[in-house]
Length: 181
Length: 296
Image (cartoon, rainbow over all chains, first blue to last red):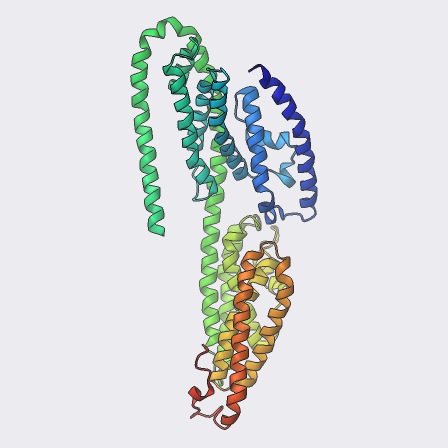
């Protein structure tokens, strides 16, 4: 985990680039006021990827979920004229969830045995929160349905680590925290 | 298709229920197993629980907000879709009314069509305007676009039959202006829906032209033919410039088919019909000989 900090610092330099690009984009969209959603399809996939990246970084740093308004803040977006669509945000969060099983597998391989517990807790909460939403039969619904496979994969890794007694002794308390939420 | 969806939804709900029922049980079992260790780790555990529930509830709070937003928006979308479907149904009725046109009842039929069209505007479109409340015109476009296109089709067809001219977007939007609350941004048909509606218009004009030929109104059919050909020609230049041209591309193909159908029909009567000129317009005309029975 020592190098996580360094990696994050390096990644952060890219955020300014993204910020710059988003301001260019909003400049262009401002040329046709009120037509944000006319051209929405042209950038939404990219915006979702950006949300995924930012949320992943934020989680690595703080262990919390990056909320919608925080994404807008980080990208320097002005919600009144060029905001982030809530559905795009939620889809981006699902993309982040897709990254977590891979992250857990590689962290365990690198010797961080406490990682699966933390990720499992986070993903369980996230999945529970997504269940609050009434979704239509659209792409977001599909991504949400896929999230349970991420959860299962992380559960499996957690189980593998636990059953072999690899997790540190202080781990027990964390486990109980998961149970009680 | 619908059945398949609902059954998969049911299945999904069942699956979730199963998960939710299963979860507390397994917790209980694990709690029992861990209870012997509880005493030794009591203090740190309660700390961990506190911080855990704090992050959990803040996450839930923000998701409650998203849920509210999505519920509100999806409800609005559903209402807009319903309004759009009513517009489609009633615009179709106007179009059928126009097709009831005959040689001797033009004014009467068109008068009724115009009256019905105004009714669609004052009732169905007014409802759409009311549901949209001056917002989300572009975001919900997909929800109301089919209805608006059908309305464009009905309005332009009426206009062509009464005046022989093309109803343009400005005139059409001027018709809709009185529906909106002056304090809100008015619903205005966008250029994409207008053009897509025009593309559909050619199909209706094709039917009209074939009908007119069967009735012996050759000149009227030729007028339609020139009009449709012009629309097709102009739209060929417009289509590549549209935002989402995939829809338009298929409509262009259909449009070309319509144009050719009218042209071929006009050709058939022109060539073969000349032998039967006395028959055209009389009651004992033998339409089968005109060679247009294939086109309808």
